[in-house]
Length: 221
Image (tube, rainbow, N blue to C red; front, side):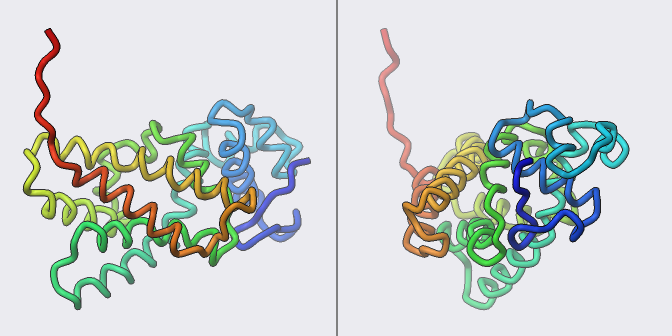
C-alpha cells in the first residue's frame, strides 16, 4: 500500500480519522497520477476496505478534490494574513512583495510542515472549479488571496485593463507549475526545501510574467 504522508510527515494508520486519511491519500495519489486516479485506489491507500467511503464522506470525486483544497487553506490563509499585516505597516507593497505573500506560505508547506505533494496536486487540478472558479475569491477562507489579487491589479496600471486581467487569471496556472517543479526538485534532492534563493527565483519569474512589457507586433500577412 502507498505510504501516506500526514500533515506533518508520515502518519501511522491509526493516527488520523478516516476522512482525513482519505484527504491525504487523495492529495498524494492525484499529485502522482492525476485527477483520474481510481477512487478505489485512494480508498485503499487510506486503509479503507469499503470503496463507498469516498462517496460517504465527500459525495463525489469533485467533493473529495474540494476537501483537499480546503484542508490546506486554513494553514495558508493564516500565514498569508500574517505577511499582509507585515506589509501593511511598510507602505504600499509592490508586485514582488505581494507575490511573496501569496507564494511563500505554499513553499513553507514542505519546509516547515512536511507536506510534500500539495503543489503537484494543485498542478494536476488547476482547471478544476475548486481552484479555477473566480467565485472562490468571495469565500471568507480566501480573504488573503482576494486582497493580494486586488492589490496586484492595482500595481499593474501600466498595462491595459484587459491584458492586466488576463495575466492575473493566468497567474495560478503558472504558479502551480513552478511550485510543482520546485516540489519535484526537492524530492529528487536537487534543491533544499528551505532554499530561499530558489523561492526568490519563483517570485521573480511570476513577477516577470505579470509585468512583462507589451511588444507591438505586426499582424501576419
